[in-house]
Length: 101
Image 1: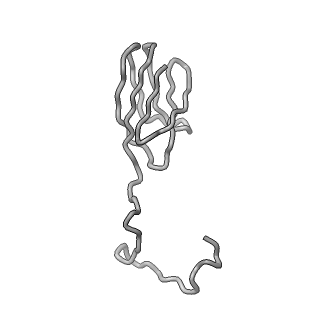
Image 2: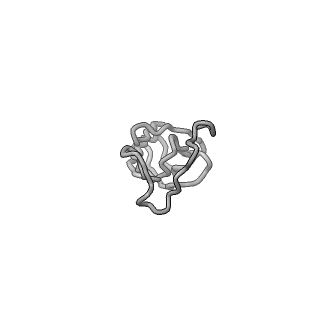
Image 3: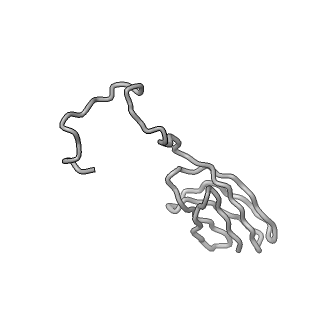
């Protein structure tokens, strides 16, 4: 929004009751993401943010399916999965992450 688009007078919000927010506004700051991994090698897996913050660390057996739920900041659209020294960026689609390696 440009400054010229603002009204000449602005109302001051003094309390939360004065705050006007659309009905469709999502107040959540986090979201649950369901992770499905199918790994060929046994080893430690790191579920990280793209900046390297670890959400979860787990030991996963090879040739099996690993299922988990992690809670992450709502603004994130992908995570980084590290397994056997390989970093893979995986998109979050419909609050799900899936990777087979």
